Length: 81
Image 1: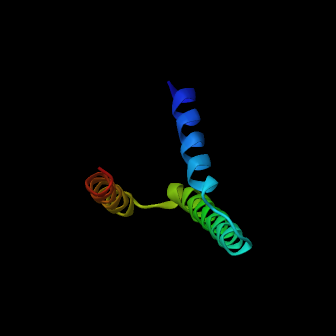
Image 2: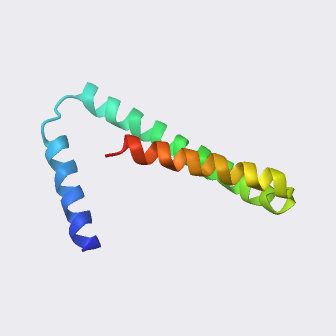
Image 3: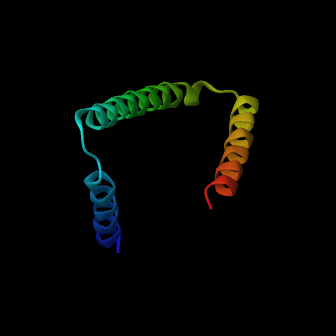
């Protein structure tokens, strides 16, 4: 099932990129890819920093973190569908 989803995503991407022509469009896509890579790197950096500070949290700070995480997941769950 996971492999089929990957194949479908690949086909969707190729159908999107098949209509792109010209050097300008290609440069825009490359620029967006670079921004995406930098964003993923930043998220990974912040996540690693957070995981290092997690054991040093007081119980009250950890409870606040759990509540904020729960609210964020609820908001993401409302937005995505």
